Length: 304
Image (tube, rainbow, N blue to C red; front, side, top):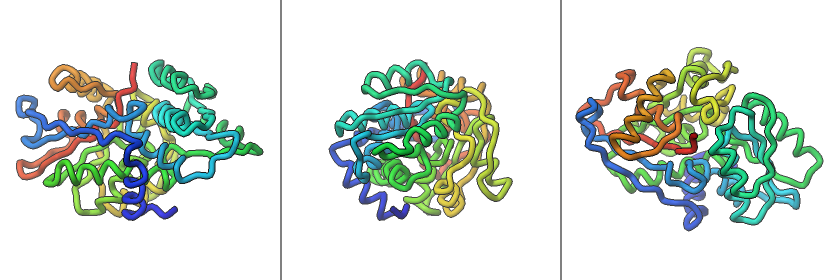
């Protein structure tokens, strides 16, 4: 499958009735020094607790799934999403996760009746084990962020935002492996200002921009289980470069403060990755003008 706007439009049609068209929440945010016009896109209310349900379901609907079902590696959210989609479609699911997975994410995997394999300390270790496991089995592998069917599923969020917030000019979104940010970039191109936010220890996009290509990083920090890709995916890289996406890197302390603000000021549960965008705004590491209408994607809420 080619990753483009047509693929995202097809995915949106395919997913109708299967995923949640998540709501948006305008914020009265001036007391925090945030942009005057700021709207949250609440993917924390999605099936399995994150935006990943979109790509997982689209990937399975596009695949010929064999008798051994589906195999996926994940820091937690992709695995939970694949397990949820596989349960919905009545396929077996084998999910490989690193030892840093949060307890809540592990609980969700078991809730969806997945066969859970805990291996290694990083997402990369789980990915290698999943690939080895799939060899010789009648199964399909779903990559967490570098597969067109998965990224086009994530990109359906952009299509929804166009309907829900038609005057949006600026999008702030977390970036790990680049699946979500790449899907949004594919849909909008350069028509919106796209700000991709990462944490220190998960900054694959920021590092790739400096190197001129995706390169490996050492993964660490608070968001390692959700933004813990060692390397930006090629699909995300190409889309983010083409869209002229910006890069912001925040600290764990700034993310923690943003999580607290989301919960106490706005009643929104978030995991570290989901709070990274707000951290970029609260810290002043990116600025939004009075003329812009900013949409902040709350990508998930699966944290302890």
